[in-house]
Image (cartoon, rainbow, N blue to C red; front, side):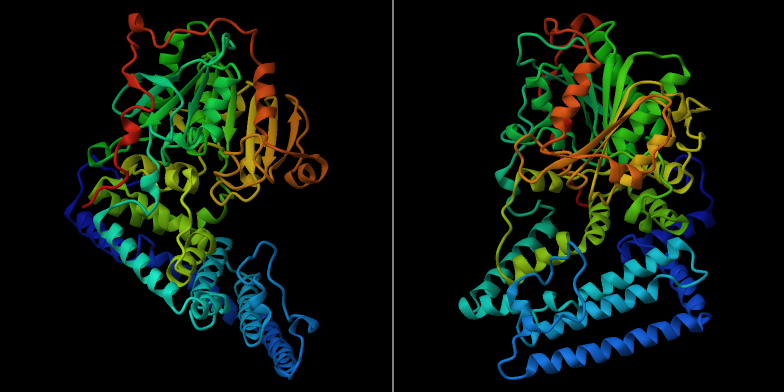
Length: 588
């Protein structure tokens, strides 16, 4: 890790400046990393004549099939749907689902594009000798390049756009031009996306009543007011990720997990992280642990003495909570009643597509850039997530808003997503190196207080949630917790993605989940067998989790007071507090 406090030599300073300059010109993507992947793939493909012959044969077959398909579709009166397609889209691919794509010549265009995609899939995978990471990077870059030239993303080759342009006399393109000018103005001035002005924290977002009962340089702790005559004696402490603002769990009243817990008779505390700036560049993982989780736990214990705490962690917050729970087990600290993890990884050997952007070259580039600013910007992280889901987050939006001229209606989740945060330089460097690159937590090397911790020490009941289409924390990676601890573990796999799978309130349509408890010390069941054997339940997983919490809680008692002034935790402000309102972007 490039330390932010130790002296830096002149030569190192020059090298760092060069890397930071490269990062600014390449959207924080390492050209060296891409070049290494390309060289590995190209060199091994050149040495694999059998693979090249296979690709040649596939290409010739595709040309023949496409020619026959095009000839049939061009016949007068031919029914395009009566001629089988040369290739079908992958499940979940929505790019060519509209019926207009079945008409000539657009059906030929989309078939040609899909066949080109399949050819490149075959070309970038299965080349003998190519390192797995390099194979994934080359395949990803090929997909991104092809997506740029998809007929669905061009005005003249998208029949849906052409139809609307004819019907509306081109006014859709005018609206799209105005949308583009508005977006450009917002980008230059640092304003959030259009439509977010309809949502505001404390007005129609994060409105569950409560008080800020503790504040330090890194966190505010919110205690939520009871809404029932009695509550369970064990409080719930939520540790959200600092890459996101906490109110993902307290969006609108109808889909707020925090409000749901409060209304079901639980006393809820939640950490709200400060949005760091350059002055916080030296905050590290240990600071986030001590000033965040442990400081919040101290406050909860002071407000509700002698009560064990149900600790809940989401995403990075769940990873940090796992570290805290392991350290507490090591030190015979028994203040936790249970641990719940939402979409949180503890083993980073298979982090999914996010791992495409994490290798030594890439991390070194980011460290050089963060050394200048003191933090990683929200825009840098957002760019990576957009590329991971380029159709959903980029191309469909560009086509819809700039070619169709239609703004997507803003909702509470989209407004929250636009309210992004920064990451301190030291913390982010430690996070990438110790977890993603070195996998220190899973391998028993992650230090807390100068001594390593081991997840195998955790003996508390655990509840773990993975989501089916998660690009940030793939459920199979989350599932690895099963062989890192022998504790009693209940695992849930729910429909949806990293955010929509967690924000899954009862009554939400098209929701389902699978749930299975593994008793302490039971034999390991692999993820494929788990997926096949565990029954599917319709609806939200929230009630199942609530039932699990109640099983591990005592009989209801009178609610606690708000804060504890005598112990130094007097109410400081109404929820949602001060830190969550800090601007998501700094204009340099």
